Each structure stands twice: as structure tokens, then as C-alpha cells.
Image (cartoon, rainbow, N blue to C red):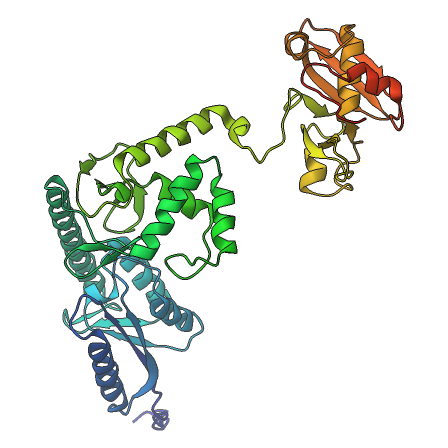
Length: 436
């Protein structure tokens, strides 16, 4: 008998039980009945389920309420994924695939990332574990079904809405001047008076900015209790609902996944329904305001009475930064005569350090223009016909860009107590010196 080497294999002691960190994800839609109660129930059930197992450690329940499953921007869901990235979770329990996501692309992306981290997602209803090959295959199929179901529901909803629009039935809306009583819109008298005042003030020549300032000074609150903004005044002036009509399908939902609203620029038909609710602004006033809006748009800045303009507006250009100069009243407001000066737009909007261009007294523009055109008095007509632009250079130099292609340079001097310049432009067309 040959000698055989025999060695003892000692038993390996089983290590202590390593518990899995288990979390759950729950999502409840506000469309469901008593969502708060349903969510609390799910949290309680998951907590009891996880803590009842000796091999599991409770890692929390992450939940979202009032968020659709087609949207990835869910705070609870994002917190769950963040904790997974930190290594704080090994297993995620979810009631069903539709609770996790209805977008196949986002679902698979999330599941595969979790799988890379070694994290299993277990869907109770479908009895799927994502760590298995069969699990991922089933998820792909089932998520596609769920996404198609979501698309079908979305399309059916859109169809119903469009049928309502075709029948002239609009949606509920929150709007200044009206209140929804559960079945119809009623006029809020005190707010309706503010709306009528806005229309009246605009027709009298005020701008939306001035109207908003007037309402703010009077302490008139907006719908949400804040102050009126220029944009809100603009919206009130243009909205057809104040004449009692409704333009339906101004916006539409682009797709069932993103749920983003898009302005209808002709992609879908719109419907104009007359007499859908009580009228605040009569047809004549509403139409007059729309015509005035159009008129001011065609005139541009000339329609804004708050802007001080003249024949030089848009033609005086800064040689330093290229911005146009703007007309401003000089500091001597106590005089009967109005002295104007022209300032670079960048200096007005920013600071003098932004642009160091020199201000130009308006009297200098009149005087130098008359000299360039060789006329005894300033003529607006000749100015418009002959001069394209005036470039302000440093120091005290103006370059007149003529319409015939020539450029003529002119240096101007201080006009303090300069009687000659005042006399040269006194009584000229477009300028009147009212001083004694």
C-alpha cells in the first residue's frame, strides 16, 4: 500500500448575515381618490414589509405625489437615484412598472444604470427582478405597452377637448375680472371697473407702463394680490375674453411624454366662440383698443409720448460705442425755456464709465446743421433730405454723413452765453427759443 498524503479541509465558518439595504418607491396621482391617504398607506405597507425581514435593512420610502409617470422630473425619484449613486441602497421595491415610469427610454435608462451599480429593482405586480436577463426583457415589453397606453389616453383626451372646442365650449380659466362659481363665469364688479379704466386710459394715450404705475400707486392688487405689471396690462388690453368671447386652442400639448405646452402657430385649428361668458368691455371699445395697438406698433417709438424725440432722433450716433444718442431735458428745469441735451444710450442705461462720449446740447445740433447746409435758419425738411446721420466724435467734433456719400466734419465750441448760436437758431423750423 502506497502512502497517500491526506490533508484536512477545515470547515469554513459562515460569515455573519449581511443585510441588504432596501428602499421603496411610491407614486400617487392626484387623479386618484384621496391621494394623501393612499400615499400614507403605501409608505406604511412598505415599511412593514421591509422591517419584517431579518435580512433587510429599511432604507426609506421615496414618494412623489401629483407628478405624472411620463415625467422624469420627480423630486422623490431623483432623491432615490441620488441615494443609489451614493451606495445607500441595494434593492428597490416598486408596486408596478407604470408607477416607476411610462416612458420606455427613461425606464430602461434608469434600470440599466441601477443594474450597473448592482441595484435590483423589483416590480411586485409584474413579479420582475431587473437583475435577471428575463427581467430586462420583460421590462422592455411591458414598458412599451405602458407607454402606448399613456399615448392612447392622451390622444383620447385631446380628441374630447377638440370636440368641446368645436362646440364652442371652453375650459375653466382664472382671469382678472371674472370668478368661476362652479358652473359658469360671473363678473367681479370692482375688478371689472379696473379693466374698463385700463381700456379707457390706453385710448386716452397712456402706455401700459404708465397704466401699471397708476394702478400700483393706487394700491390696486392683481389677481394673485401682487402689483400690476406692464405685461399684465398688455394681456388685459389684448384678450378677447373681456368682450365675452373665447379663442380656443391657443396652445396645445406637444406630446404625451414631455407634456409641454406649445403656442399654436397654425399647427392645429383654433375656434372663435362668441358669447361664452359675460362681457366687461363692449365691442366698440375693444375694437378701438386693438386699432390703437396696431397704430402704435406701426409708429414705433414715435407713438410713445413718454419719449422725448425730435428730427434728430435715431440719427445722432456715438462715435465711441456706436449707440444712438437720446434726447433728455437739461438740468435747468426752473427756466421757462426747455433746454435739451443729447446723451449716448449706453451712458443712460449704464454709467459714464461705460462710455465716455461727450453730451451734445441740442442747440449745437441746430447750429452746426445750419452751417453745414449753409442755411440762415434750421430747416427740418432740408435736414431729412440731405443728412443721413451725425457722428459724435471727441473732442467736440461732429461728423455729418451726407446722403450723397460725403462726410463733413464740424468742431463745436462751448455755447455758454453764446448769443450768436442762440440767434442763429432762434425762430427756426422745429425749434423756438422762448427766453426773453
